[in-house]
Length: 197
Image (cartoon, rainbow, N blue to C red; front, side, top):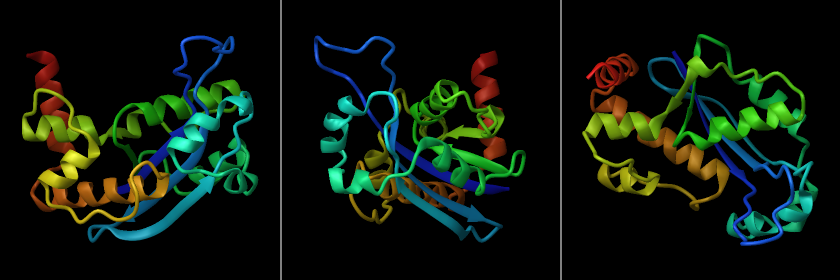
């Protein structure tokens, strides 16, 4: 099994008024690292800014939060090009698509829907590592990525809320969990037991 660890930064609208009709979060940055084989060797990485297509005027707050400049965004690619690059790193049934939390898959799926593109990432290959970590440590609430990094004594790289650094650090958490005996199969069984319980 290979692992494609992904993080998206995306737009949001939190102001009390002025929300555009049909507004939805759009991906403005993608970061990904692929870990392959038993030794989890790096098998590719991806970092791109992504131009918001539907609501570009409402991306400023998210860009400021993620430290993305207008100059960065001028170098950005369109959503379909981002999807193509991501798909090249993924093989259905052979690659787990991993992110911290459930928002990343949702924003990808909605982006595909709005762009009228098929989502190439199968839902059954998606792993919310935050949920997996929560179940593994027996926590009541879902820990943030920083909390997991601290708890596992992972040496974090880069800056929080930058897509590639968050993806890379999520990959480090995954590797530490695997090193300490966590397995995907045990997660699936624990999740099933919780549902049945």
